[in-house]
Image (tube, rainbow, N blue to C red; front, side, top):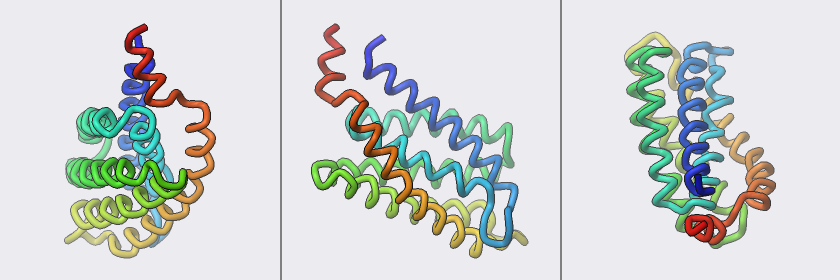
Length: 182
């Protein structure tokens, strides 16, 4: 199995686990401003950014699409259908936006692409997910969305540390391309 194939499979597995866990955890509020899902979902942006950086935008989109399909199916089992569908719509939109922004900025300063793409895609994800999942219910979804986005901002900043460390040790696109011939 090539390094690129391993990277794809690990990315897909990470996405499926993170999104499914987040869809279960979002059903458990901590207070009026946060759910437990606020702490797991933002790590998806780290996975997407690492895949875009090492595998390229096309393969990162594949990780997003396959991870999305698996996570929606698992979420239909472990979460409510409304949460699963809202999550799927928000995840797909936000992660594809993340890939597009990251890929355009990836040659800039090492921190600019992951931070900008995560912050903008998180805003889209938060707005879509909370409005689709909870509008018209008794859930205080606007305050949960605000709290969720603030946590995503904090985690996006914190994820710069593992991003920087991991890009130093993960194989480059060139090394992955060379491994295809091996």
